[in-house]
Image (cartoon, rainbow, N blue to C red):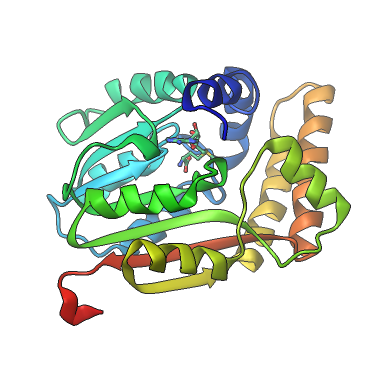
Length: 262
Ligand SMILES: C[S@@+](CC[C@H](N)C(=O)[O-])C[C@H]1O[C@@H](n2cnc3c(N)ncnc32)[C@H](O)[C@@H]1O
């Protein structure tokens, strides 16, 4: 397993270099590094059905977009943590200009190292867990951090059953992602003690989002080289999603309130 500190350094110097983050944000939309940007985030946060004042962890908050919506539109109290120092530096700057610092607290942190037990009414995470190898530990830490009855909602890049196309296998290896099928994810959550587990395959929506992103790429002010690089990258994503190897999953679950709920 890659030690946490070196994983942070790898992410900050490769996929989440400041330059790459800016490009991702230009395509995904202001404050976001995940498919669908603001619109998808707002829809998913709505699904949590949390009363204002509820305490939420945004695990892998990136540039803070999800946390800002939770606070400004839903009145939630949000702790956002992220392993990438580059992401956090930009997110912290954004937070200062949003007048949300009474509701949003952003910290450098690793999802695997949470030290808060029974703290959160909900844990929300968008396209983060693909970076984490030890999923059993991840779900056990998230479970401990939730209050009884607390909700977990996350989206993540997932995969189809093996064998995969070599293009997809190479992509996963190059990126250093740790992907699971939707049913493997459900089993991991069950093993950690979660109940009411639901999974939804959002791959069709993912394909639609990628197609819109490709139009956006054509309209951005970019150098020829950068535009070509982004085009190529998004065409690859589309192909892999259409092949069925690359899936996008939405998951919800609850930390059981009492043994009666099992
Ligand atoms: C695809 S970005 C998504 C960012 C944000 N959730 C969003 O929706 O815009 C994935 C994020 O996960 C963060 N990340 C990766 N491993 C992490 C870990 N172990 N703990 C916390 N954050 C992590 C990365 O630094 C990056 O900001």
